[in-house]
Image (tube, rainbow, N blue to C red; front, side, top):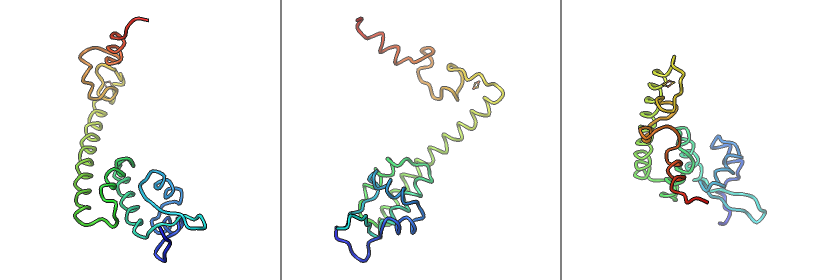
Length: 154
Ligand code: FES
């Protein structure tokens, strides 16, 4: 991509977005943002990358993993995203946040019931073994035990 007066250095992107230069490089390495090299081998970015970095930061603050953020942003490679595209992201991320909130509330409530107990039982403790659907089959790594029993003798 040709350099133009609208391009930004990595330092300018960092300063304007409020994130360290190392984070900008990290985002680029992970494919979340894209830049190019000048003939002098310096990194340059389009100004619209600032909006993408802002969205990434917001999603990170919401606790979304970078791989998921990338997956979602890749649906809208052109920046800035439109209001309709933002609405799609908003709905998807809101649903995930709702799930996380529900899960955290459940964890908080389980903590309440475990405080004062301290057994951390693999069989009974919801903190130690949350949502264990194989617990009724017995203690330990049930799937591993099943796989080993199917393995031919050496
Ligand atoms: S610590 Fe005992 S049930 Fe969780």
